Image 1 (cartoon, helix red, strand yellow):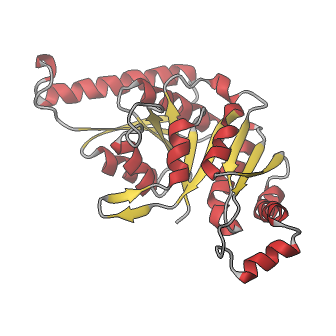
Image 2 (image 1 turned 120 degrees about the vertical axis):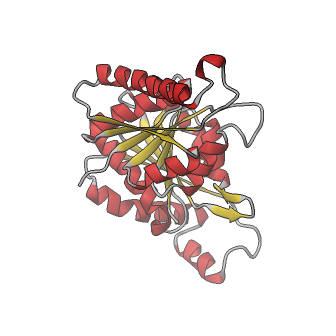
Image 3 (image 1 turned 30 degrees about the horizontal axis):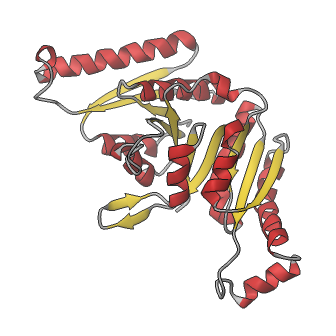
Length: 290
């Protein structure tokens, strides 16, 4: 049984860009597109939509109009819609659970760091069990031209980044694109590496060769599984967020993993995913690996 690509829409330019991106990806992967809108009754709305029924009609008409535009561009694409009254976070997290991936709009840059994605987007990313792709308003198919890469961040042991690498290779194969696999490294503080780790680095000829061998080992099974996908191995000294952002200009998609951090106020995404989501020049896919 195949699962759909799901797009969350709310009528904003960002969500319409996300819907267009999701439709193109569904066509590439030969999957159904599911469009989800979660709404809540607003008693203080304008007079012409002041009652619940009027607001629901307005919501459904807005979704129907957005879907009609997608259907016109992709007449062979199978599209279903779901309009639900309730919590946007709960609705979207539930929708992601049985989707190939969830696509949402992102406001990108803004004046208040930490609120650029909006609270709904950040919570959904932190809690969703499937990959979530964030797309900005103005994103166009021109960003997916040949030569633009799928950039994926790799860190730690091979199993730590396996879900992100799988997603990146599958996406690249569907698009006929190449992969740039990025592993960033920094000089460890004194005593940070165990004697065993330092011995492995010494055996590899130093820290940078050790990092290159670690990246190659993580990529090996995916190169074997996707032999037609060209791969560039990119190992660079620096913070992971900065190194990834430095190569985002020619990326058609950036893929990062995330392990949600539970706090007293709820789940939070890691600093690398957070920074990339706010500043990358392309859509960003966040893939859970916890």
